[in-house]
Length: 161
Image 1 (spheres, rainbow, N blue to C red):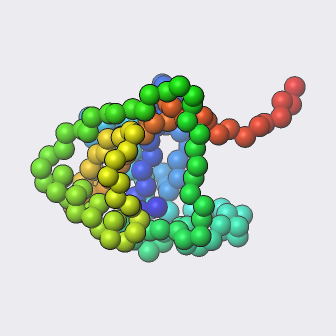
Image 2 (image 1 turned 45 degrees about the horizontal axis):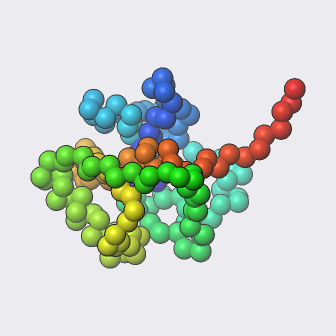
Image 3 (image 1 turned 120 degrees about the vertical axis):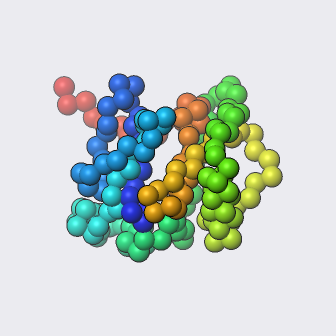
């Protein structure tokens, strides 16, 4: 999670909010991006006891550091649907000062080993730079078109009926 808040992206077609984490106080970031809502940072009391016991403490950011890299965890692997075209979504416009802050943050992520530089990719997805009240920037990636081309990983739930 992030230093002062966590992002929730609404996913249902009615625009209704799904269950959230991180508290009850919410702030809509921008009317232009109504799907993005900020939530306060998690505290240890917000994390269910069973998760605290089974998931390593390094997963839960209680330090206020913007981003971290959890070592020893296998990368998430997804399966692409057959016969799809990879999306090439144009980058959203950002104000020059926001763009500079985003570029600086990306450079920091590369130096810390959290991001790897990729010279070419079969697809892309746009990012947005959201300026927090503290003046720091948060990077949000729009993965909706990527999500449309991957096979959903849904657990099998028995039919009780």
